[in-house]
Image (cartoon, rainbow, N blue to C red):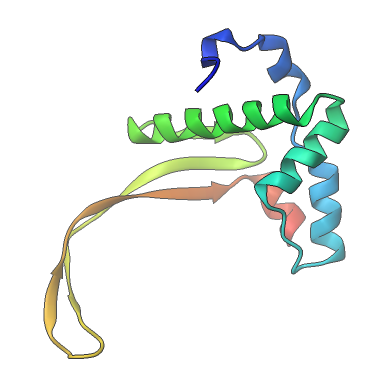
Length: 124
């Protein structure tokens, strides 16, 4: 998979900031606008002046770190943006909507995102 997290230059992480101003303007101008991963990479690369390849690697590593932390039941807080955590759902009884048959839904762990204050205020 190429370089490991430890091999990446820490200065890259200092240069990378999600272009919140651009995302905020999209939200304000068009409530139905969507940004996919490729568009995010293009926006960040344009904002910080790094190549798309480097930015893509940083974003992918960031996602890996968050997933690894959640897998270990850790909470990840990005101040102003939000908090990722794992929520445990209890086992419960449910019904098959087609047959009406009662069934047992197993307990499971699910990821949860709670938006931070700044994000909540921008979306209002």
